[in-house]
Amino acid sequence: MDQYTELQFLQSTASDLDVIFSFYDDAIAFQKTVFNKHWQGFDREMIEREISGGRQWKIIKNGRIACIFEVEFSDPLIWGAKDNDPAIYLHRIVSHSSFRGSNFVTHIIEWAHGFANVKAKKFIRMDTWGDNPNLIAYYVKAGFKHVGFRFPEKSPLLPKHYEGTELALFELPVNQDASWK
Image: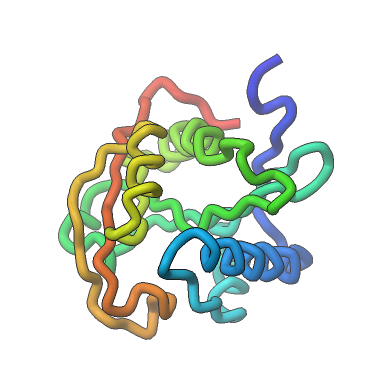
């Protein structure tokens, strides 16, 4: 039995919208208990565009949505000139509280290698708050290389929590032998 037998990676649909926002609300409440920053909420139209563009994903475990995340194919406001590299960008990985600790980041990384291969990308990238040493260490332990810090410019295209915040940037070369399931 391989790792994907129990987990299904599916694109989110419009019918998942309320579930996605309940996950975000739960994540914000959790962030407030473990760090001095938290997400500021998300624009519903932005999430609807991500869903219709096939960029919002969900992980189904035991018949339930256990985790959600978003994939971008370009992220110039955060990555600047490095955005010219062929990469996918992972954002807003959120596990349902009853699945917290299930190590979905590792499963997403494994899935992302195959997904990135299909899309002819060479890197998997992420970002997080630059002053969160626990999360930085977690992503490095998961296999990402911490490649630097960046202050993104203020933009209406970015969620509010990016304003005035230094970000830690992470990159992982794509395993060219990985297949997408």
